Image: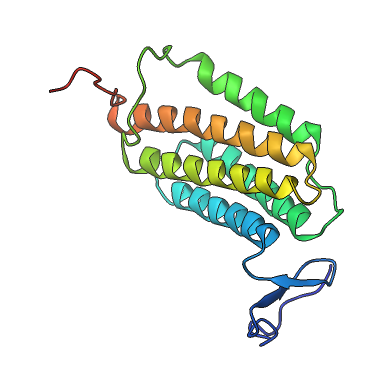
Length: 183
């Protein structure tokens, strides 16, 4: 096992910098730190989803596996040049997405984020993942970000949308459709 945190504060970041996994120091507001920080935020949001008892066991297991993926993805972003996310991660998300989506009715309208507490939390997690994807895309314009990272985040946001639909049906029995003709 690598380093263990025996002391939570080090004071090394008091000057507005933080250490990357390769030992280099960067500003805390650098795009790379923003990217892995937003991945961490998304992982925490998935933890909020898992705090609801209404989450079915198969979805719970899948989301827990995704949390492990997110630690690896964050590690890849934190250590320039490190590769952790592979095509197998993305294929697994696609397989899970297809299986969950198979039993859902086709959408004819947009749905409103909500539909129950876990579903609403899932929509929030989805939007945080989308933000992480945007930040990683921006980072890729100036530093190396492997395409697997961007594809994983893109697929994860799609999967969270479908999971939110599943949770909405499990919690409230329905989704709230956008009413474009409201007055």
